[in-house]
Length: 611
Image (cartoon, rainbow, N blue to C red; front, side):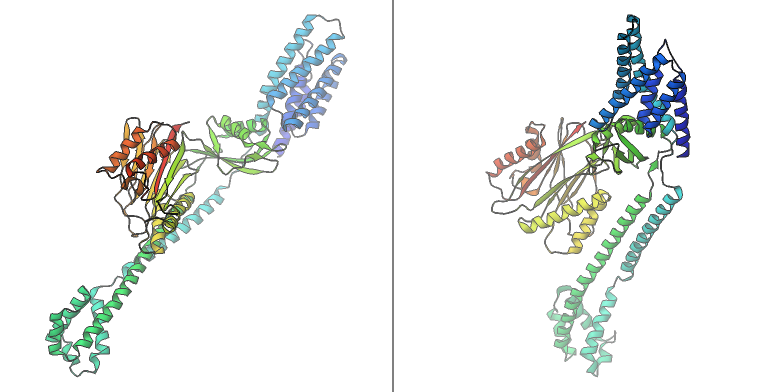
């Protein structure tokens, strides 16, 4: 602040001295420099004081009245413009300064006997004043703010924050490994199970028998028959007649032993099911802990801070924003991990409320590339500070379409879908088909879509989001209630698309040269905690379309090659409207089904175009 005040004092002194500079009996620097100070300095009264002191000291009496009136007129007009529009642009102020000085000069010439040469010089003076204001405002702004240090978090604070995140990540990794070791340590073998069966039968039936010690010796024939009997019960769930009869030849308690063995194995089977469920849940928790650790490690990776390297660019943004009536108090420029630029600013309007569109134009012009604010940003910027984040604008934009039909006789569709645009420039379209139809299928597929959206918005990768969603569905553990998931993610910066299909129908890409089909062979979500998930990458171009369909669209075409037929249907529809494409597909599918809707049908479409 002290440095800025020193610079301001130098500029005020310079304003006094410039009043001495005259060209052909004209003093254009007076009104021009006053306009610059009036726009750029917060202390507007000092602009008046500076100019009037200089005029009194250096101007002839004949010129003092002219430029005094001109300065007062300029201030009044600029104040009126700011009162109406909340802000006065540099171009408007420059025109005002030149025009008012020329008008005052021409008005004075009417009272004198000077000829046309004076009129010409007055007009030229106005043009010179306009140029001085336009160039001078930028120069003065650079002098005052060019070396101003942008507020950046201290390195040790960043280091502390990043270290804490890395510590949390290591903790989650440790927990994950602990769960994995716990599973490995608790694996049970058949020898332990056999020992348990033997101990229970011995304790409940054989303990009171005098021959117990002899029967349970490994060399005893009874032991061998009993072993065969137990193995048959374990394998078939009941004792084989052969071994049951042989045991009766040796043991009077054969029937009791057989019944007890069956009861023990039934109980062990139930316990084993719960035990395996516990092991699966531990493994899923370990996977989720790994995912959390990954997110924390990703958050700890600093974006490259370009604020110090790009001071001139930031000064240009500040100048252009100020010219439009916005005052930036904080500004940080980052290069993200994907190489894209991000600008984080704290800004307020000079007066009233100004549209963010004007601020975005200033930012884009200052950076030399198209920038766009986050979708949740406010539309108006007021006099109170607010944070606005800008991202580098994408090369492509996507338009979506959807067409749906509910199964005949059903009240609600079991299919759910979403179109999601993330702040990293990814457009994600997802379709989930719940098993069956009706409310239960709808709830299941709706849960799948909601989980996917929440994980993606939290910053998880697509693959991790699907795995975590699958883990949640398995843990939920409702029998025979499963859903498919069909996901396509398009990077709107370069058009690269990734496809993830879990038990889903085919996805189609419509291009100029034809229609490409992508198939899935994996099980639906919620069936098993172990799932194979391989993403397919495809490069999209301007004018390409993505088409997703639920199972009900393909299954009832009643043709040998349903995917090939669907490709022909898509190819035959000539439209650039995604909504019309989706509806056209369903209309042609109904021709194959005779107008009947035997399952829920959903068609999602997305067109990709260059901006």
